[in-house]
Amino acid sequence: MAEIFRPVYHVDPATGKRVNASTPGAVRKKSPNWWARFYDPAGKRHKVKLYRDKKASETRAAELERRAERLDSGFVDPADIHAKRPLAEHSADFIRYLESKGNVPAYVAASTFRLTAILDGCGFTRIADVQPSAIVEYLARLRDAEDKSAKTLNDYTATAKSFTRWLHRDKRCVLDPLAGLSRFANPETDVRHARRDMAPEELGRLFDAARTSARTFRGLSGADRHALYLAAAATGFRVSELASMTPESFALAGAAPTATVEASCTKNRKLAVQPLPLDVAASLRPWLTGKAPAEKVWPGTWSKKRAAMMIRADLKEARATWLGGFLDARQRDEMDKSDFLAYCDAEGRYADFHALRHSFITMVGKAGVSPREHQDLARHSTYALTSRYSHSRFYDLAAAVQTLPIPTGTPGTDALTLAANGTDGRQISLGPFLGPRPAKTADFGEQSRTETATDGSGVDAGKTKESLSFPTRDASDRETPREEHSS
Image 1 (cartoon, rainbow, N blue to C red):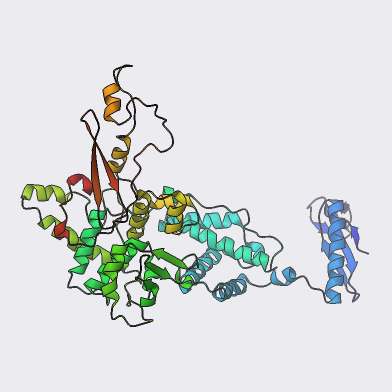
Image 2 (tube, rainbow, N blue to C red):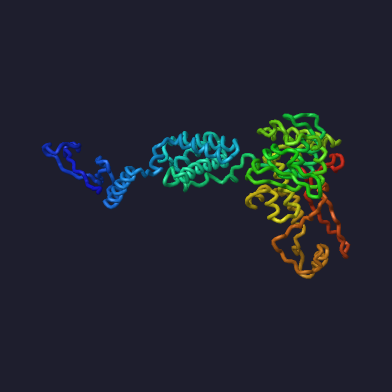
């Protein structure tokens, strides 16, 4: 049975140092801490310092005695053994665990780098050393010294929490030491590379510039890049997903053509089957003719962090062609100040390759689909994430408020105004859908069309309806966009 006691010692009152009991004038004192004394089953005597609280010391002493008995019987607590192992060994096991789960090499490499940086930067060597406050201080140093963004800091935090959760689930520690560690900051307040969507007019000119280009970018000809941009804008697929596609990924025959990315190549590890507009399928069909089966249709190294460079060059050519169409020098100079086909606009938002996904999600939202359909086509887990990919231009908002039935005159004098707005004095409910409801149409090649309705008073009430559109015809067949389209 474990015994607890308070050791007795003697001190010299003149110096305060411990001395033998036989020292003249020595003062006898008791230790403020309780100690435990017990024997293990092998007969070995143990003496352990405990706490100042007697009850806590009794509980701890009994636990130590039980642990010695469990060790002697062969029952070993895994956490006790893992607590003595270096964290470097645990991190190596964690990386092998990520690889065994089938994570993509890029994710495993990023996790390895972040975890190693945190362990080395914080000086952690054992599981007991891991402290949330030390990680927060390390991330603050990264932010100040290396100007890391909030998203990057949150990525480091997520990797560290994933590691300690695995330690707990694998019974390598009793408790998760980072269970209470929250995100470092809101990433939306520190966006370093904001993206914008591209208007249908911009997409059309980008497609034309790629299709007529004589350049080859990392193995992709102008026709290849045209098909790549068209597929990206019509499906919302990401760079790595597009790079994995083969001729078998496309089913272009019939009334419901589709494009498919295998689950092993998607971000959420789910099979992605996206419907294609009929005119997009018709444009891709001749380009796919002759492609080798089971071979990637967009091979090469363009997807290795070079997609932004590729689309930037094509945007530059498209913008030069567009500006060259203005014969008046003064007008051309004015247009040169606009953001139309600009890689980076006045607000610091970029039109890189991922902006094609933003464009797709924005156009789907303007096509009048339900929120659930919008989320499903975007392939997001929540609609809040989908809404962050959707963009509105000022003239879109201006068109929406023009339909608001707000009376501006004195009572009884707004009859003509109400008639002109098509309300004819009927009661209007200002419900949740205040803006115009876009029309659903299968004509994906048409940019927009204006219907002019004339009521009995002879006042025109023009309403513009937008449809999900992917321009595939030459830029010369379209009108030059007005200046307000460049905002």
